[in-house]
Image 1: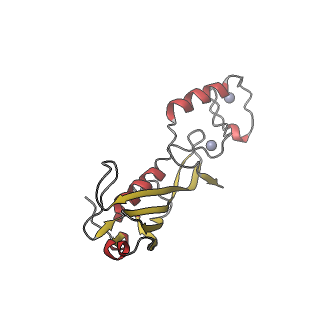
Image 2: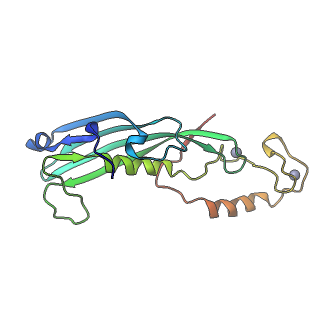
Image 3: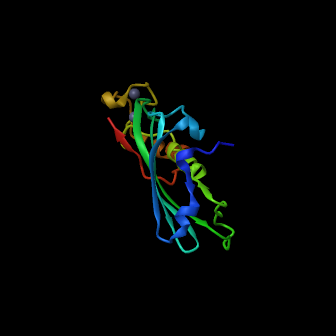
Length: 181
Ligand SMILES: [Zn+2]
Ligand SMILES: [Zn+2]
């Protein structure tokens, strides 16, 4: 159980007083405060930029949660750093009429669960590629093919990579991360 973090705890009494009221939460939260694994983090914080907006019967929360991460290319093991942004679009009802929609607490809305889920999704980037066409290592002689051809017969390589990738990669529901050099 993660303790509630003050910046991510919204006073819903104020917000619900008038439909259309907004409250923006733009802050960097230490990843450890969110109980997010830090192994692949490139920055110690999770960037949060959310807007809570009151409606007739509840509150919507929309915006972005971004995590900068680093990992190794799954083909050549070169380091890869990137930032993945996850879009947030949540609805909270004042009185539950839809069992799938979370209900608001008495006077506060805790954004920790939605921010944490988004951060975990951003980190669920699978072993990345340093670039889409990374040639990896020669499976026969072990040469780094980014440095040039090694002379082995590499004809069926691409199909082998495709089969391997299909086994290893489960696309998360996030945008393809940008890979920085
Ligand atoms: Zn690579
Ligand atoms: Zn080779």
